[in-house]
Image (cartoon, rainbow, N blue to C red):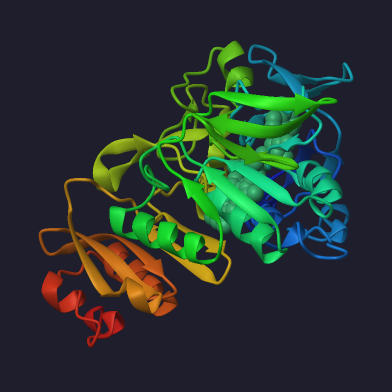
Length: 404
Ligand code: FAD
């Protein structure tokens, strides 16, 4: 019987347990998570959880799943060290657990901001887990002014959610455009216009010079001579992979825990999956670290197969979604700056897709309120079917028809 220890209790960990059970092999699984909850879905935290009257965590699996399958869960328990020679790990209580295979599914943490330090100010939040969301919920109801630092996905989702709650919302983004590292100029510009038209104040190239504080709370931020009032501050300036545990154990890391195409780290008994990994992405012949539910789930499936001698290299097509008020953005593939970009549809209609081509191959799409384009693009990109770019960009032609 294989003894598997899983460190982490998020999307990747829960999917990994399910995928291992599907192999029907004799196995003993121990899941160790520092959180005090069973694994739950993170995406609702920035979208619906904040504004619902009595929100419930969206559990990834019911409690009975773990109990019925004899998965030993240790919550509120942080893995503090890996002892590779002995094949065991230690947790903060002092207990140790031995393993045949260790799976690191330890995700990321929110990047800290020097000026907006959540440990110093009681009205500053980041949003990574349910406890963060509950803290924000407890204050946002009474807040008039919500200040969001960072115009990335989480910042913009929170901005839209707060605006829907009737708050005055300001977003301060340090870069010259929104989501600059994640989407095309066309989608950035559309979102800038859309959020502004909903009443969200957005400042680009915004360097915060100083903050005003009172009684341990930030009351305003200053950009030059302009003051932005704040009753609540949400900092969304990206995430940092949790690599320290792996690094201290001597595993190779570089912007994430380095894994091969089977999610194996530089130690063959240790796998890593999800947001914490940096993996080879064959389609662009590069290494990537992705933060998405798709990547966490598919890497978990890949690792489970590899551990039970049915290895299939990880080639899953990356995809992602973000809901910002009434706007759904869906991305398939990975944008590449050198690929030719065409816009399908009209942003003014609140429905369009940006298509990326490498010659006649579709490599990536960013769809705004165009779910059919997104689904068709996933098929076209995965199958590498050649298409005529001008034809694909013609909104009169159903993308789906090109994949048949
Ligand atoms: P996580 O889900 O972060 O889980 C890691 C777990 O490991 C955590 O429970 C953590 O507490 C635990 N842990 C860390 N260190 C240790 C340790 N030493 N010992 C024990 N436990 C440890 N993705 C999308 O595709 N679409 C979305 O719309 C979307 N929205 C999001 C909104 C929010 C607010 C957030 C935070 C994320 C969102 N994401 C979204 C990203 C998505 O949730 C992540 O990509 C996904 O959760 C990654 O899964 P994971 O298991 O790798 O990491």
